[in-house]
Image (tube, rainbow, N blue to C red):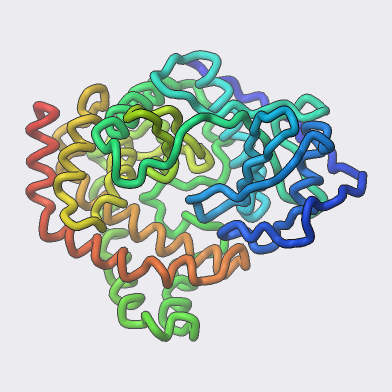
Amino acid sequence: TILGSTNPTLSNTSKMTTKSISNRSNGAVGSSLMNNELAMEAISLFIDETQVTSLQPTTGGANNFVQYVNLSSGNRLILRIYNNGFDTPKVVFEHQLLRHLNDQQKFSFQLPKFLPSKEGSTMARLSNGSEACMCDWIHGTLPKLTCVREIGRASGELSAALSKVYGLDETITGNVAPYWKIWDVHHAVTKQSVHRFLLESVELNDVRDVALRMWSETLAIADKCQVYQSSLPSQLIHGDLHYDNVLVEDGKVTAILDFEFAAFDWRAMELAICLSKYAGEEPAMPYFHEFINGFAESGVLTRAEAQAIPDLITLRILSNVVYFVGRAIAGEDNISTLTTRIENYEKRINWLKENANAIVAHIIGKMGL
């Protein structure tokens, strides 16, 4: 299936003055500058804002400002205001990809469907320079540690579908670097700036020892990435597929969300990303087995990819360290997004080292490699 490369046009910024539903900031995680006034500005570009009865923060996620928009009709929409350093190409690509997938492929679950603004685009630029969009609400709840095999099955289904999207102009994939380019995962970082921040930032004083161990691990995984360059096939991947970007209902996946980090990358990164959160659970291996069993129904890997999975999970975890440092340097977040996670990250990495052989053996056995 070929995805066209025509960029959507942004709607103009609204000039109207909107009345805030309340004077209190919505306080979405990672979006402390966003408030109800800005939300209503965004909403006014898509629908008649007098239809809105209330806004309600969503749960999960650490990047954007996302709210439920409850309407007087009883219907509900989703509002997203991007907090991504004004990275318009990334937004453009996400919208093009989702439009294509919704139009050209059939899934056992739903994908987000963006609503057109009053000017016809699915994107609108706000007075602060951010992009905003709205989409239909999809039934379901965040699964957390439930429905693991079913999420694995849906993830394999999506991976197989993304492998059939070709003909893409890679110049429109935004600023989403492949994971193996670990020093490019955020526009505000370099290898040197990450090292300096982990070494010197006073905000990391309470976790300095862990931060420096994570630095050593990051250097080691960056070296391993160079070895994998010649052996791991690439395709389009979701790039952030885990249980906080999935909805379930009655034991079935109803939606896969948030394609903001979709990019061309090593195919096996999709499974690695999916598994990375489960590595912090106790016991973790049953979750790995269930997810892999579901993924294997339609997902495809080579033996070399299976053998790389523990390292690729580690790469995903450490790329988060670099990414959250970048957001702190850029002023998009405070460093608490890292300090509240970094000890868990180390725990996951240590568990992966202890269980790498068992993980690989299960993948090879289940997928007949």
